[in-house]
Length: 616
Image 1 (cartoon, helix red, strand yellow):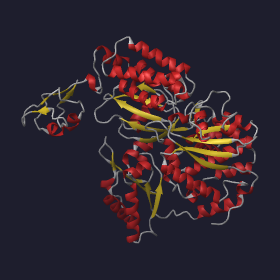
Image 2 (cartoon, rainbow, N blue to C red):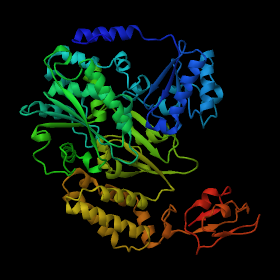
Image 3 (cartoon, rainbow, N blue to C red):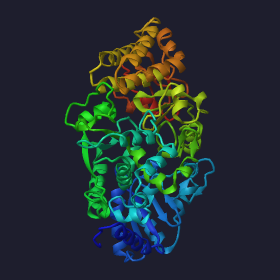
Image 4 (cartoon, helix red, strand yellow):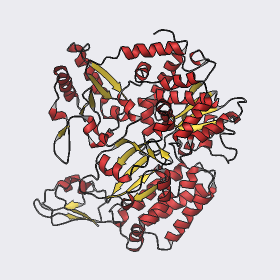
């Protein structure tokens, strides 16, 4: 590679790479994000390389290893370009067949995705409802580039936004574009990004100004930021460089949790590559603009998602929030002005600069522009990463993209915003996904976690689960947070075990409101949301647990009993599976459960082929 010393040198490199795109060959694309690798993608890569070499196909077929494409439930998957043929849940033997088919220009129809509604195979990835109903502005790049090869990013237009900014040479113009775009922080409260940049730009440099990428994604079931970092790390780096140019920042930090080894690996490689062609460091591309980025690994504390706690952790101190003001934008890392945005926010910056603010703002709704990525998990047919315009109704995401409920169950609610979010009932699924609507419903956007729950889910058990998580993750600095979350968990535990009386509901609600109103940081102020939202929308389940000593969903063990009904065929599968030998009966006759031995594990219900186990 030619030494890159200037903007002209970079443009020559980009023109060379663009001119040498291999568009006449079919390409086998294998997603290899964390979810894909856990499902066996590395075996597919090994098989693909072996087959291409042994059959002398390396000059005829390209192999591209990328990050996560989004439909995580169907991993490991294979995408064939340019025809967009999609093969889900591919095994090693199927991989051999696919390569043979590509070499012959054939589609292996028996390996295609089958539409459950029609029973027909779907050949093109873009025709799958999961993909066709999305607007993939950020995630589409995960399909096009190998994240550890900077040339791939540059070939698809990467760093062109930075070049435009450097050529324009007016930091104020950049801030104006970000402000006009209406981009709001994608990590939680939705603070206007342009306004935050204006505030940092107005601060004196002093000993330094800092930009931070908050990649401390701590919500259970959330993995949007991880997937962007793994699949397109250069988009984050480019966004931060543009942010530094606009605000006068001198140092960048990517704060990423240590549990993301693949993301850290790809980030390190990307930073090294960016340094090599002078996109980072002193006098970037021969200009008088200097900026560098380093990685700081967090220990996985949920509270470090809060800005001031994150700053404490970066400085090597215990991750505890501090009183504000002063705000980080005034006094942050090493007492210098500090701006913090999350991964998805930074990834949107090159998109805005390349497309211009007026085009970006046309996507979404008023005060909620652009797209948002959600991790759709739980009791829904198709789980994975979903990118849709802000303001998309919840119904659209769960039923049209996610495919609706599994089997014959009925979807009851969705939890948005992670542990500090709220549970929204199904009769409010017409609500648009935006910051204001979710707040009015008693939830939050958060970083984008979306957990779907059906009628087999107990809402008291859900609130108890999240409260258990939050009490463990509380830093303990605030007494009301430390003791309040603990006491809320204890009350929920009493309710779920049949030990509570009716008066406890008023105590629980008052305690939740006290925690919300008196704690210092965002974690404590939103910690009561799981309790308050379930009390608001699912109070009848609380009443059933307390007054009737009954769990309507059949989840809380102390309030349920297992029995065998007349549908029993006497197959004895439950007898063989029961770990406590609590089931007896003759072959081909109705069996019986000994309630004194039954531990209510549910194994018999899972094993029964005739729906003969009753939970009441």
